Image (tube, rainbow over all chains, first blue to last red; front, side, top):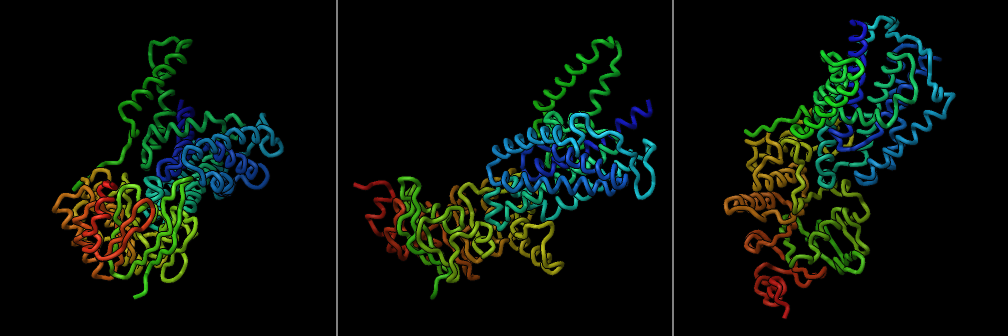
Amino acid sequence: MIAYLVNLATLTTIFAVLATSLNILIGYGGIFSIAQAVFFGVGAYAAAQVALHVTPDLLVASAAGAGAAALLSICLALPALRVRDEYFVIASLGLQMLAVTVFTEATPITGGFGGLVGIPPASLLGLPLTDPNAMLAACLGFLVLVLVLTRVLMRGSFGRSLMAIRDNDTAAEALGKNVMVLKTLAVMLGCAYAGIGGALYSAQMQFINVESFTLDQSVLIMAMVIIGGTGTLIGPLVGTVLILLLPAALSFIPGIPPTEIGVVQQMIYGLVMTLLMIFRPGGLVTLRTRRQ
Amino acid sequence: MSALLSLSGLNRRFGGLAAVSDFSLALESGIVTALVGPNGAGKTTIFNLVTGNLRADSGQILLHDKPIIGLSPHRIARLGIARSFQDLRLFGHMSVLDNVRAATEPTSWFWQAGGAAARQQRRERVETALERTGLSGLTQARAIDLAYAERKFLSMARIIATGARIWLLDEPASGLDPRSRAQFVDLLRSATAEGVTVCLIEHNLDIVTEVADRIAFLDQGRKLAEGEPADIMQDKALAAIYFGDRT
């Protein structure tokens, strides 16, 4: 039971990094991408290759994951950010479809549909992370780093410029903001975070394949951000916890026959999500209005 | 006196419609020029041509005798031309303070250049802008939660905070109550006294008469007249066009 909970906590922490990554794009930049699982995947494959062939050190693997995802994100950002918002969504959907095919076909790098197996247990600065508790602590450490960096950047001029563009890009440009550069930086930052999430995921699972990086995963990450509350530091964390822990918690409802538990779980889960969006359309965590 | 901003022979068509035809205008330092004309006369299109949001089909725009046509809007803004919008375009989910702060930070990087001295300078510009617009007590309110007049003044505060010396104001006083209108006139006068050059589009002719040093009258993309407010206002033919009586 303890092992199950530690594993669940570790996965929740990793997905909190992913939700924070998409929050940079959606919440702060107003850039609606449904391709976040692509950058999650690129980070995971890059980190897995580093772990398999260079070093299992989580810092090195995360740097490789973040770098690979950030580099690929430029390929999406430069052409796609020139188009209007709704077209960017379509462009990101196209990238998502393309990436799944590439992940499946690029067997020498991704292992194809069978994935990459035998990823060695991670270490951190020479310390092995074979103990699940140590891995959880490492993932929490990365999450804290990502949150602190996000807070610093979003409270500074970069965050203000990004939010200005989100609220009205024409007005932001009229104040001297280079919208293309700022949006590209935001996409790179958000995707680098997703790459870190991928690196942590490959280290935790020690096996990755394309099924973890599909459109379903991108939609799940988006749901975490929107249900939790966009443009806030805490919102995506709350959304992640809710989305990952609610199904697990529903498994413990007494009196439901084991054969029916899946159906009941789906119904309650769907109902809770629908009610949340009706009564808290801005997400669970929203910015407070302060008028002096 | 040489013009700070000079527009000459500007043309811009939208398909078969000539939105701006052979338009010329010179904006001089510390002078308020009003663009007046009926709806669809091409006034906002001229602003969009100056700020780079639209590109002229032909003609020239010179800022300090240097051409700016073809530059992107953010580059033109950084050269010292600030504008407001008819629909204000505030950063609605940001606080009043952050709306104004954002106007002082043009660098598109993770941080602003210049260190502590530049930071202090930006802080002072923000304080000045908030004081002049009477928004000092509302710094933490979100822009979308402000009353209409407060939103108008927030739009002005952003322009003041940019430090730009040329202001293009698109209907800045429309919908203001008499008290706010008087506050707006004071604000404009103190800015022009400091050498700020203003070009404004305004339908309220009382405001135009009160603040403008010159008026350019437009109709269907063409400049029909330019001169002192008293002369333009007394022209019965222009009044007929303005009020829709073309018979």
